[in-house]
Length: 68
Figure 1: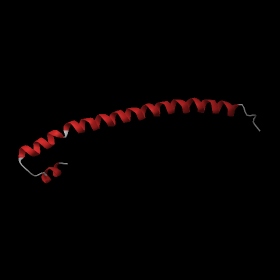
Figure 2 (figure 1 turned 120 degrees about the vertical axis):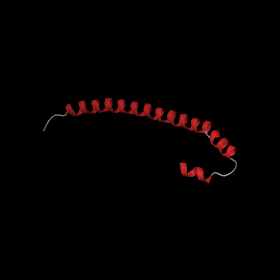
Figure 3 (figure 1 turned 45 degrees about the vertical axis):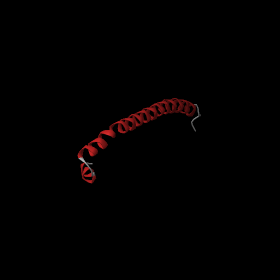
Figure 4 (figure 1 turned 135 degrees about the vertical axis):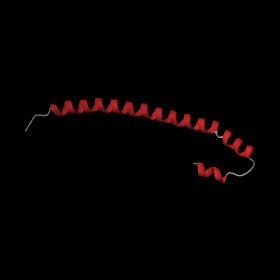
């Protein structure tokens, strides 16, 4: 990352302004990713609960089979 700063050209204040102006979009992107990960975690938690219940029901049905 730091090596990318060597490619910045222009007056020092222009470069600093450009870097400063990245803060808001970067924060928005981070918040968007956090929301997305949280939503994904909620879906996976629901999936895990559903699978656990379905797995228990399937296991119960298998136990009802008459052994041969």
